Length: 566
Image 1 (cartoon, one colour):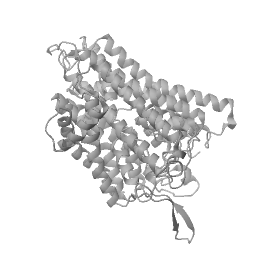
Image 2 (cartoon, helix red, strand yellow):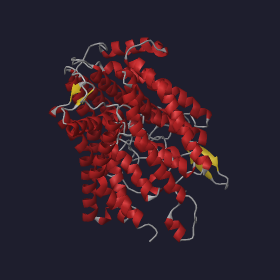
Image 3 (cartoon, one colour):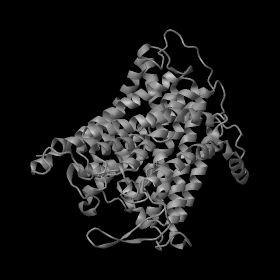
Image 4 (cartoon, rainbow, N blue to C red):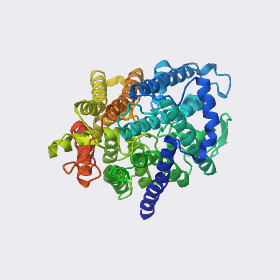
C-alpha cells in the first residue's frame, strides 16, 4: 500500500517539475523568441507558402475563429472520407479491413477532430495501419494544436491594451505542432519503445500461449500513436482496451511515462499563463485551486478502490482486499485511481483500468471531474474553460464588494458575463439533455439492447457517455453498447457543440476585453491573486457543478453506493 501511494506522489511530482520549464518554453514559442527548435523554421515557411497563408497577418478574434473553424471542418471531411473508403486503401492494410458504416465514421471523424477520441470501435479490428496513422494519429496532433493555439489567442487578448488583434491562428497552430507537440512526442515515443511498446507494420502474428493454444495478435505503429494520444490529451487508443492493453502500456515504467504525459501540457499551460502575462502569483493561485480539487479527488478514489467492494465481501470473496476487478495487476488500484482522475481532469479519456468496474464513488468522482471540465483540462481548452469560471467568480466578487467587476485592469460588463453564463449553461444542457433522451428511449423500448447493467449503474453508463462526449473526454463506462446510429449521431453532435462553443465564447470575451482601456486598481479592488478571490473561485466551481449535476449523481453513482452490499 505504501509503495502504491509513493508511486502516486512520484508521478504528480514529476509532472509539476517538468511542467514549469515547459510552460516557460511554450511562452517563448508563442512570443517568437529564439528557442532550440528554430530549426523547424524552413519547414514552417514551406508549409505556409504551399498553403498560401501569411502567418504574420494580424487577426482579430472573429478572423481567428473563422480560421480555426475552417481548418477543423477540412480535418473532419478528410477523416470522414478516409474512413468510409477504407476498403480501397492500396497500402498499410495487410488484413484487408473494409469501409466503415457511415454513422460510425461520422462519430469517429467528429471525435478525433474535436480532441475527444470517443471510440465506438476497436482499433485493431476496425482500422488499418494507414487509417491509424493518417486519421487518428494525425488528428491527435492537429486537434491538440488547435487547443493550444486557441489558448495562446486568449493569453494575447488578456495582455492587449486597447488592441483588437490577438495574433494569427495559423502561425500559433503550426508552431504548436512543430515546436511543442512533435518534439515531446518523439521523446515519449522513444521512452515507450524502450519500455516494450511495439512499432511495426506487420500483419497479424500467430503466437503460442502458455497453455499451448495459438492466437492471432495484432501489432502496428503503437508507440507513436500512444505518445501523441497522451501528450495531446487525446486518449484515442490503438487497441480497443486502450492503455490497459500490455502493448500500449507494458509496465509500471511506461505507466509513469504515460500518466506524466497526460498531465504535462495542461499543467504547463497554467504556468504559461503566468509567464505570458507576468502574473506568476495569479497562475500559482489558479494552479492551487485546480490542484486542491485534483488531490482531493485522487484521495477519495484511491481510498475507495483500496478499501475493496462490499459486494465481494458479502459473498466471502476478497474480504478486506482492494478492489482489483477491472484493473491490471501490474499497476494496482491506487495507480488506476490516479490515472482515472488524471484522464478525466485533463479531457484525455485514455484508461489503464475499466472505469465501469470502479466502485460507485470512484465513478462519481470521474463524472464530477468531467462536469467541472477545468481541472487542468485538455491542452489549451482546459485553461479556456477555467477562464469562464474566473469571469463568473470576478462578477460575483464584484457584487459582494459593491464594485463594477474587473479582471487584470479591464471592466467585466454585461456582455462578458452573459457569454460566460451561456457557456456554463451549455455543458449541463448537453449532458443532461442527452441522458434524458437516452433514458426515455430505454423506457419506451426496454429491449433496445444498449445496457448490460440495470438500475442505477445502467443510468450511470448513459450519463457517463454523454458527459464524456460533451467534455471532449472520450472515456466510457464500457457496459454500454454504444455503436448504434442513436449513440453515434447524438454523441457526435454533443462533441461538436461541447468543443467549439466553449472556445468561441471565451475568445469573444477576450476579444471584447482586448479593445477596452485599462482601469487603474484602487484600494477597493479585490486582487485576483488574493486568497479571498481564490476561495470565491473554488466556491463558484463547486456550486455550479453541484447545482447542475447533483440530481443526476443522486440517481446514478450515489444511489448505487448507498445500496451497495444490500
